[in-house]
View (cartoon, rainbow, N blue to C red):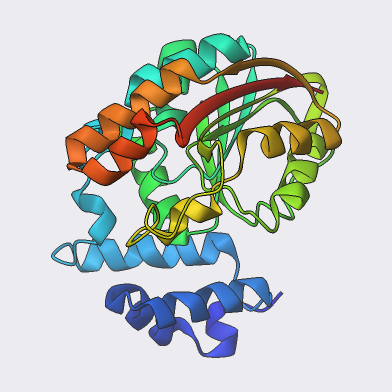
Length: 280
């Protein structure tokens, strides 16, 4: 496989990372997909950049560890650490559990699992800036012997069959047109009798144009019954569906951010949130 220096991309990658434009990031990702550069080379280059340019604060560095685990104004998922604890309890996570966090973002949930339960967690995310920030934060908290992070495609995961005891998705976006494919990958890497656990906002019915005005992403949410069907089609046996606690988390999330219209949809039960626990 070609090295960055072999291909003459070293200076350009440095510029791309510092510049942070979405086009530059997309091109770096494309080079990685094409095999011109590797994940290790990207992360090594980013560490070099940060060491020589400490004044260049990457946008993600502004989030505190509390932000990564909370549902405050800058929090990353509804329910924050409360929801993480609930999912962990439902999934039966212990020190002996190997967990794959699909869509691990800045790694807040993964670090909480490693810290509280002592389990082994692998975070997978498609954004190398998030992966880099996760690696840095995890090492700073001396949790890197329990939690590792990888750049990768959730539709083609870089893991062998039956590699994990638990596959974890906490508020990672559902992909309406590819969710079946993603679930197939989750099941493939899950050990026999392993647990799939998911927390996600959903719909209970079709939403009107007025309901989704200025928020078209709400229409892309899965219907609760449809998602149940997809889990079963993927070969999972659903053991528990909780809509009370996660819906309360989402409503708190809306109140914190002043999303009055979205909160009304939750109050009308047009929107809900659900935690699914399913076994392979």
